[in-house]
Length: 140
Length: 389
Image (cartoon, rainbow over all chains, first blue to last red):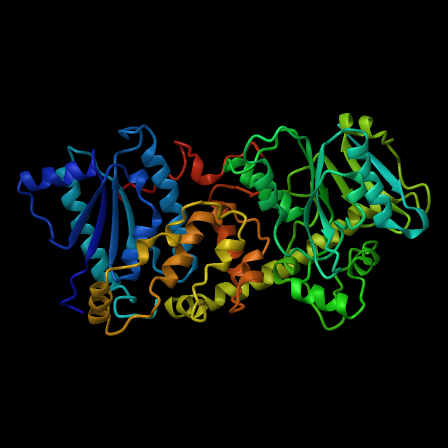
């Protein structure tokens, strides 16, 4: 699987992580092109259905990005997201799915470098883990 | 404080004594209406009914071991909007716990509602119950006969619902179960002679209940005996629960197990329709969200080689789990409603148990503990979201 390039779906909050990713771009920081980003107004607005759908369709990893604790533009959306991710990881794990494909990271608008490092780190981890076993499974 | 009293049963007519007790709530103007299980005139089913006339109590039978629908939904229906009536609702433990969850999810209101919990030894599938009646069996009498020993003995050739066989919370006000305003108990007693009524002081006074040390007939050991019987029943059920949970966790380890679990699902959504916690009026799975544009199906088939139709079966179950698992009370109505006989009560309960444990949350225990998805703490789960290692 040397040529395996993981595909990551990002769900980023508008105020912090999306702006952080934008900063990485405008700062011309290099990071692997393995991520496709979906912008949300808040990490707390992410229903697990979208994460599960992406995984069942064969995404190798999910990166959910929100503001650091205490910094949420809507006061507490990221704390609620954190609970939802904890529940989602527990359920995926119990149902026989690799919950380590789902990452949550707090990345602020000024952390372009940290965003690039996170994607780099995640791509390396997913390469170790291998492709999502559901990638070629149509019977889901 | 609460008062424990014993209701004397005349000539072995347990239901008669209970009906006259419930009738007093109406007759003495304590409530305007009762929500209570009642036999249908056909005799082969016992369903939640809303009663305003004390003369309509003749078929009332909260001890019948059958639960065709979960009455928590009925409580939601009749209390969710302003009604101006005083209501008493008679519920088994799982129904009571589901009501508590629905109140916290703002789908039911306890304003002017008296919750009455009844002991439950387990329930049959609704078709099994009807067959037993057809065969001339009296399932209520059999349930009451097992009360003294707390024995879960289904009629020969039948068994109780899977969810009931692993239910370790059969008693209202028991461990991790909400304490209702009134508890009607028969476990550990001889219900042909007495049934237990526990009520808070205020209600006990209105109902003229007098505290008793023990039943006047039989042994004076009733409270201790009841405690012992309940503890043994809970221990047996807990062991059964742990046994089936362990078997489930072994089966589902790995992706093949996950796919096999739902291979016979026909995506009818019956589990969702029967679930007391799935209350959303506009569930995403009832919208056209998953009616995709025609070319999309071909693109998916192209990418994966072939796709299962209808699509999104596993997505439905995993998403529903994420939405309801932290409030799952284990009533098992999902499994009773499943035409493919999938063990969904077991799956959802087992998975729910671990998700609930993250927040030390017990659905249906307390009105004060917020449902996990509606709240948060700043100082919890602090590693999640931070760079690891």
